[in-house]
Image 1 (cartoon, rainbow, N blue to C red):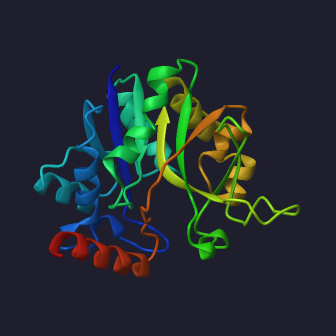
Image 2 (cartoon, helix red, strand yellow; image 1 turned 180 degrees about the vertical axis):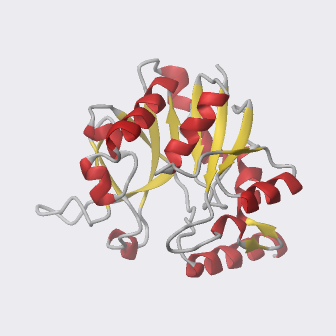
Length: 248
């Protein structure tokens, strides 16, 4: 099975413009993400997908495989879909470019179910929320699944509401996705024809496009303390952690 990893990276982030190139201990954030991805032995190759020449040029200078994509894509997954159209593979894994602490073993967890179950079309990761503040943080999508780990809904709200008991564990999304080529084509074709799906647009969570349209998304629980860099404050946290890891 040929498996490729794709890291979508755009410059024009509404909350943090230029964040793929943000400096972390002397290297841009996208470099750190790429280094984690190439440690995953399941990958035949890993690519950064960008629409920005500044990111492209930095990747080239650092020997990072990079592909220039259209600047018309509405989501990172659409950008991944363009790469998949150029580089055929049996499985495409989307790794977010703003999680430099993401562990290689965590990335592998999104791949493993495809070796076991040929019917799986889409996978995503989730991890138990340890900080209660994250439950009410709207930048963190919460994941709701059935007993088999099949996604029912994702929301930026604190849900589900624990009416009967407070003894409930909340889970947050870890943004690593695995796609069979057919599922990825569906996502891109739907976007071209209709734009974002109804609830996907409201919550601004891409994986909802699959759930809204009847796809079973297999969620895998991982133990991960990764932090997504959504704001400059998040970057400060990451820099402190990385300095401690590198120099302590």
